[in-house]
Length: 225
Image (cartoon, rainbow, N blue to C red; front, top):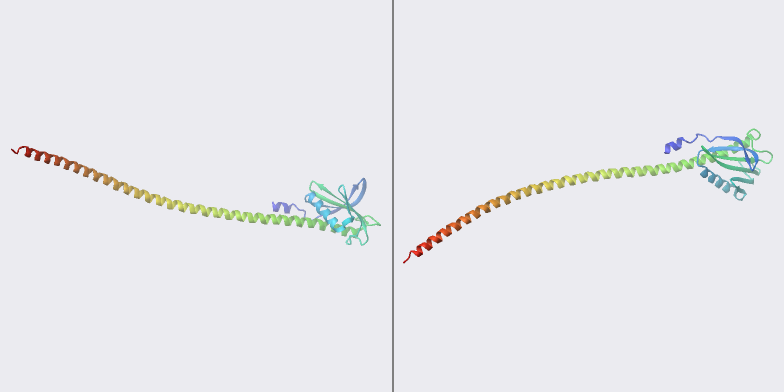
């Protein structure tokens, strides 16, 4: 997104001479096209004019007027400036008309003042582009940090999964050992059962023998006279 936005900027901010009707009166002026949002450009333009010309800056339905102001780069004597900002399909235009007192700003009639005024508009456009790029750089840096953090989180997750696999292997070994111990215990118990059955059989045999011996003793007693 940053690359697309940067490459979308014009390499230069051309200023052309164009007429505009202000309250029904056509006026010759200068216009610069800035490939940025009109609301942002308009707010920045008003802010700059307000800070530079203070109470002399007037706003009326989107038309900005400054009477008796001095812009030393353009004229050492007071001038009258009428300006307007308009949205276009490709960005925003900032237009102004300058009454130098003895002439209106014109590319042919006042070339020196034209060049100074042209630089003023170009510098304003460059300032906005730099500000916009600074914001994009800041956002890109934040996105980079977020990506790096996400990358570390994925790595940490992989490490956690590896640890869980090792734990699972150990648990499997423990279960296998328990199963082996259980099988040995089962075999031992089965052997004990077999031994017990033999002991029971021997005990029954002893009982039979004891009964036979008892009957023999009783029979001998009965034969005594």
